[in-house]
Image (tube, rainbow, N blue to C red):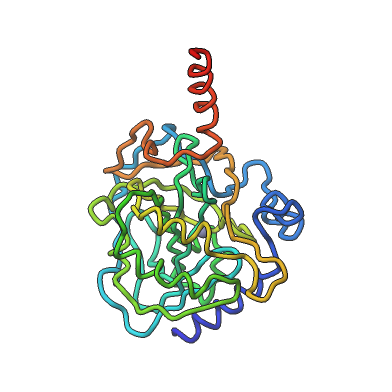
Length: 316
Ligand SMILES: [Zn+2]
């Protein structure tokens, strides 16, 4: 089972390895449609990510998901990989998600991250048009599918759990299981073993009943419209230095490349919701400015600095 999953991962990564990128015009998200036709969003298509705003309907039947095996230490080892587009933690079997309005049991296959740069935020989804510093995606595949390729042909083939990541001064010791290994996967193609730990220790465990739900797509090529998205309202908190390990110490290029390029801003642009319903779970609370703790980018601070300087200078 685990060997099959590993083989499938290799096949899938081969299928989608034709290179795409985030920051160069010839291969950035706006050009993905040239290489991957299904990334070219047409009217009424259901792409991700989206902006979450107060136009949401509460669904009283959306309770907490059941996260099987997330609170125990799984056997075997996990693998952390830099694939040039993200840092991915491939997990062994034993974990699955169900309930919370999902139509089936979904096996957990990997988790990965999206981030910005040293002075910019990089979550994929936004809340009231505001971006969090990072976003983590836990990818789960519907159990009836033999492999990811067939799951991508099913509109509910994958269930992705999305967590915003915000920044505080204190280190997140549980997140250290991943951040302490990042230096071993600084360059594209590098992998390292990670000792399994309870995945639940990473998550906002007291607020798992508060989430948003919609149907969308992969946010990376081939952008298949095959994802039931669950976006948790309460973020994971990590430290500034843990964030900096992603934004400054991970590269999209191989170790021996002539020019070394940091991997930054690996998020896809926001897509329209069109006629889709975006739901709030029974316990979710819509707070305007919920993303108020997001650190501001240099760009948004600049007008403020100019005003303060202007006032200061006018008093001289
Ligand atoms: Zn993702």
